[in-house]
Length: 156
Ligand SMILES: C[S@@+](CC[C@H](N)C(=O)[O-])C[C@H]1O[C@@H](n2cnc3c(N)ncnc32)[C@H](O)[C@@H]1O
Image (cartoon, rainbow, N blue to C red; front, side, top):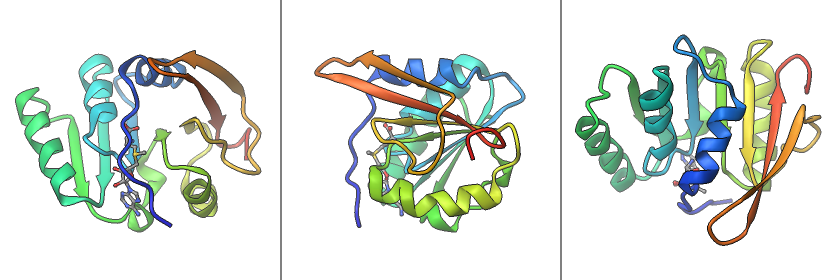
């Protein structure tokens, strides 16, 4: 089960972040962060702390360079490793773009670790068994994208 790097388009990621209603005291985690575009934009725009977890070394290097370029070293943390080894209780908000199989595999871990009130937004793919509090379609650059918003304690 492997998911390649497919970046979330800018317009779609902005809508994901606004659905999460991020505040400065939030901690956003993006498991499978790719080039860290989501975590960088979240910290840059909303001032929150953001953590990107990515297994591919060349993408992690790219993330570190981008974080430096944006001067966000005090706000963005990049973790090189397996998203299944991370402890998610630190998060108050999560972004997912992982595909149906990884969403299904990650689900029990998120159910165990996320604190009540934590928001999760998933791009294109539902988290099976969770009840979304909002579903939205965003016009992407190439095709429409579905966004699913969940809240721990309400959706699961
Ligand atoms: C579809 S991309 C999404 C990237 C980014 N979140 C975005 O929306 O622009 C999925 C990313 O997850 C990473 N990934 C897949 N499995 C992983 C794992 N077990 N641990 C860490 N990263 C993983 C891939 O390398 C890829 O960069």
